[in-house]
Amino acid sequence: MVMEIRAEANYIRIAPRKVRRIAGLIKGMNVLQAKLELDHLPGRAGLPIGKLLRSAIANATNNFSLESSRLFVKDVRVNAGPVLKRTRARAFGRAAMITKRMSHVSLCLVTQDEIAMKKGNLDVDRGADEARVINPDEVKKEGKIAGRRATKKSNTSGKEKGFVKKVFNRKAI
Image (cartoon, rainbow, N blue to C red; front, side, top):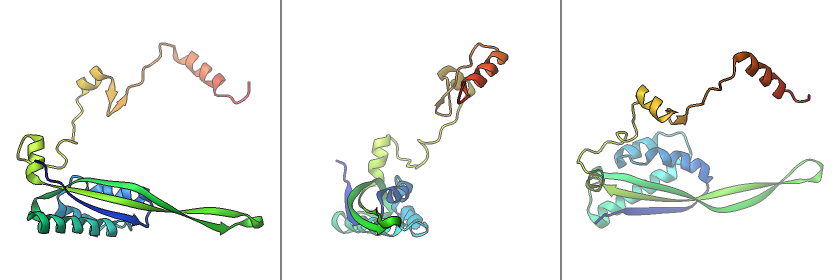
């Protein structure tokens, strides 16, 4: 049975795009590391996400009697909340719309044992599955270079290619 500890923070008066940038940093981290990371981030969204993380840790320790050192951040979701619409006076008697966006954040914690069961071993390392060494032979077989497709070279000679390039790059013929 997988035990997930959830906590939610609604109506945070920061745009979701800015909150997602901060929330993505703590995904998959140990909660103690995540707390330290959030305390030292320059973004304004670090404070409400840190408060939400502390709330989720308190839920885990009080309601489920779990140790906070064995908890990991499984998922952080940031959804858009309601938008406050305001107007600002502009030149020539016009008005411009200003949108003040809000966010809903939900955080999910799991224990170290559940992560180990999912991976099939007892070693929990955050960056192990993300790191990958690129082998030159593998690149030739797959036709990919660092996640991007390799471009095919045309069979035309350099002279013709340059002339065609000049003709078709002109704005007017």
